[in-house]
Amino acid sequence: MDGLNELRGSWLERIAGATDESALEDMRVAALGKKGEISLKMRELGGMSPEERQVAGPALNALKDEVGAALAAKKAALGDAALDERLKAEWLDVTLPSRHRRSGTIHPVSQVTEEVTAIFADMGFAVAEGPQIETDFYNFDALNIPGHHPARAEMDTFYTHRAEGDNRPPHVLRTHTSPVQIRHLEANGAPCRIIAPGRVYRADYDQTHTPMFHQVEGLAIDKDISMANLKWVLEEFFSAYFGTQVRTRFRASHFPFTEPSAEVDIQCSWEGGTVKVGEGDDWLEVLGSGMVHPKVLQAAGVDPEQWQGFAFGMGIDRIAMLKYGIPDLRAFFDSDLRWLRHYGFASLDMPSVHAGV
Image 1 (cartoon, rainbow, N blue to C red):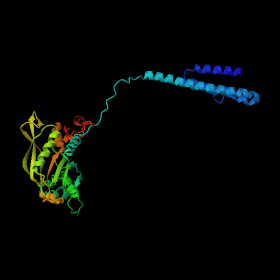
Image 2: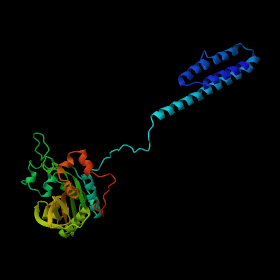
Image 3: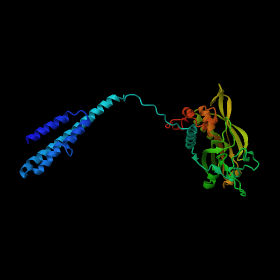
Image 4: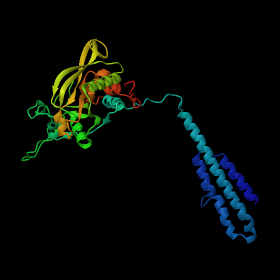
């Protein structure tokens, strides 16, 4: 037993003096490996008498466990010391500000669409949607647009291709969202009060026109609706949207789907090449409107002898340009990140009906 105490003291001293994990591993093999000193002592138990084995066995097991525990503790201590040294070399000031991470922005068209929807929702208008690829009937015929009308020419409208021998009228990329009004009346009848925002397509491209743009059209059908209601709705909308009292001016015009028809101007002023809405003595045309033509109501299955209403349509992109000072419509669709960061909106900039923003 005295030899075991000496062996114990020797190994514990050597383990305590180890300076790195490699030397510690060598000690483990020398002490507890297959040919290690303590392992060889364990093998000697087979040549002892039962009485000797009864005394030496527990002592050797205790020594083996103690040396193993000392090795594990020393390894953990060496690991902690190595980590401390590495952290000292890789010191980082956690109080420094983090690197700026750019966040995405909401496109002005999406923002203005939400603003328009919120304002009209406050006036009781629901949102209606329809397909962007329309039939000739819904896009033209049902809206009282005759076959010779310039809007039906291929130079103005995108037509789909028909197979040779197929004489059906071709489908079109809708030129306005008015077909949504016809589909809604067919499905739900009168009365109704809806807006139809969405993409529309026309063969045009310049500073204020693009082949694809966004419109919102409104429709209100009831038994006693008049142009006075239309004027009130539009003035309330523009005042909420621009955040200031806006006067409107109606000018007689002609549209196949409304009778009477009117183009609507809003009060503005021009200063230094910029337009300010709601002040001054100038006027800016922003939309077309009128009372729904009886033939349009008939095409949608509504009796014009009992029902009447107004309709209007405006470009979402154009009123976005007016409100936020965007000079070129084409920039909306250039996917320029610099432009989007400048004119885009943070995700929490929610539209407010009362403030118009």
